[in-house]
Length: 163
Image (tube, rainbow, N blue to C red; front, side, top):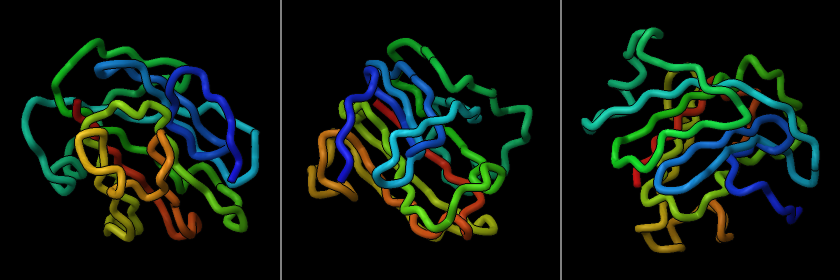
């Protein structure tokens, strides 16, 4: 396993994506293949609400409801709203021979749900967070790390965060 020191918190899909977000703290995300220190900046879409919405309801939102977020820094302040993010993985042309991992480098997020989709269908789902047992984590490390599986079959990743 490749250990690295991230700047504050980041959501990574190893080697491909980093953005920061403040929800009860600062976090960011990145996409990376195992054992690769490379990172490329990426845009994601965000949506926040104070209502509990299902993944299906969020998928049905008009594109106008989503806000583009820059890969370098997002700051929503301390907020109890539910934040949704979506990543267009299909457009990234990821090397499918690498084992890609999604990493959220802020371990104090209370609830984190990750949905990996193929043709709008969930192929993998994770439910974890600081308010749940450590055993709920896909990879038992301080940050949240999620194996993505075969990225050639993945078109979207949706992430739901609440603190």
